[in-house]
Image (cartoon, rainbow, N blue to C red; front, side):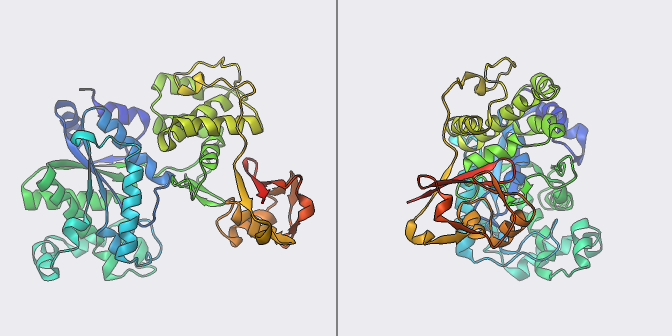
Length: 426
């Protein structure tokens, strides 16, 4: 069995670990079950979730069994970690619909056939808990003094933290003990901000089950400029193509900074590390081929090779290909795609003549086209000089797009340098 710990370390996944020697030994000597939790606070995963998902893929590839936990129970409370204010309370129906969406998306990355991975929902054991019994059996094992030292709690103490959210670590810790008992789960993996919750879960599992379990966290992923990875001026980049088009998903990866290429190829593709180092060592303009490969591989994982191919050809047809003759060596499937004259039109959005009328405000059109999430986002884009209509910059947020802007019932709308939509009047 290939030792996945060495792979995860080399590729940059590891931030904290409860006992590195024991963890490495366990992963080297036997097949283990491990879990990662995803709270269904929305109906889609976003790029910020992909770091743990990619680690799960490597762990499964090396023979270990993932337990993908979707928090239908914990989402009813809300994790305070990394938040400056309380999450909105969601209905049970909304949570359950989100659970289904996230489970479908996780199925794109992990193999759930024949018990190779298991999908679990903590609503199964959390929603039926009796409050008094839980306080007596679980609450009595937690020290409030220790809980107050957690970074997520200290940060929120300044702005206000309800007892509802304060109790969240108890539930996440309880999840670990239940999964250990039901599935023999020995490891919990999670983001850097989950360290306190993970350690609490390991301690609770030892107390309740007499089992030694371990925790590992992944680093907080920041872009070269220090901002949070996966965020753009238009908001988060989602795996749901109805929230982020596949073309825009591809373009997000294609437009990363040169300095981020090696790290992102390491974390979000399965390319060999020798190849990752070679591609990221390329200088401009050849480094753009490494970005095409990153974008293709990341899009293929999330949406399939066929859609990744369409996005690659579409972007290349619009903006040009970085290596049309395929001179740069790669093991990526992108090498099999002959470019030449084979291109795909950029994504389009239809607007009816009745809806458009005699004109439409540029802010409304940007939202309609999916280039901005709201009028506020669109206003900031326009006033910041990032909006282009038929390649002419629009800086007035009151600008009215008129019928005369269309050529043969089509116009091009652009947000920033690369995100485009063709608006078709029907």
